[in-house]
Length: 576
Image (cartoon, rainbow, N blue to C red):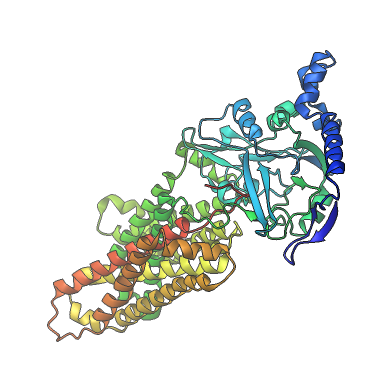
């Protein structure tokens, strides 16, 4: 056997030279077959030992595939996969499912496929994957209820089912798609390396079931794992290891082509749209935007700017804000335990988001109530609120902006390109500006006694112009996503663009149509409408309501695409 370079895109691959003589070839083949018969697989070794009654208790059957000693300080357990021995038989998947008592559609371990090479020298490699029990597990740091723990001795990352509320944020945080949501139980569950078996010197289900011994448990040095993660090499198509520092190691003696990619690398399909999160994000930003726009008008034009509709605007915004918080509970698998969401304040942006919007809801309620205290006898005990109206307006705006900032960080913390902090921050802030402006304009027109006079006020015209400009910029930024279609690399942003022009083109089209009509066309018509143009008050009010509804529909569709057109970060998959 000799080694030759196949192409510039390959590492050095082994090739077999043509035998000079048929007789020698037959002789070598016979010797190879006889030698191969002397090599026993893990199952055959087990069978032989069983027949010879040379085995101790069940925990010793696969003792050579697990460490003899517990990890020392600075070490932990880790999976080691021999890619040369993996044949994609999926015995590990079946054993994991059976031994852990998983539900029918629940999978903790999967088998993917890598392929590459050239037409003349194709190559493929099966890969078995599960939780990597990372040194810096993103699932644990992101969990708002502390439903994860990393064992200080073994390093195994465990999920505490009883503590979980089913928010599924750990699924978004994990770049390797290890946690799985169980809809029937309303919680997330994941691989724990069969820690109870390891504690009793028994091999995990996947290790024990592999007929070729392709999976084993090893002890790794954590400092070395950190150093290896800096090379930014893990598996083709998988997220960079520096994000969470996975400890699983993949071994092979083969020289694989450099263009090896997951079999599903070029497949794109819509992701879960998370309707409760869509409603929560859009409506909280509407509420925050309306409060902030009203405050800005008061500061720039004086209290008279919102004198006729300030209370109604605050109440309208508060109702949408409270509806948003209620909608967020529908996303939880176990909403009855939502009170636990404050436990992760130290590490989880989701906990901080919940705290921010809780403060916002409280301040918003007090601020809206301050407008109605004089006219409602039942609110007489709250009379001092009238004197605190200005401080409360600032408290509402600041707590609302804090909540929106935390919302941005919830998705930026996942370190996914399509949810980057800059892009997500612009989208969320512009949604608040667009919906806040359209809300205040609608309420002002509905409650104004002199619509013609309102059209001439500088505040109304400035706010209408601000709405047009903000919506125009937002649509341009969203349109810029399609520039990735021209790029050769199949990046995550290009996949998003492919989804938006393919499977999700209907939602994409309606999003731009609603945004343009509600945020540009109708506000511009009202902006350039002259008081003596003959446009009735009823038409102006109808235009304001329709513009608001179009803007709201457009932002809901944009947030739907925010989730549905966001390719999941995961390990290599197989052919569908």
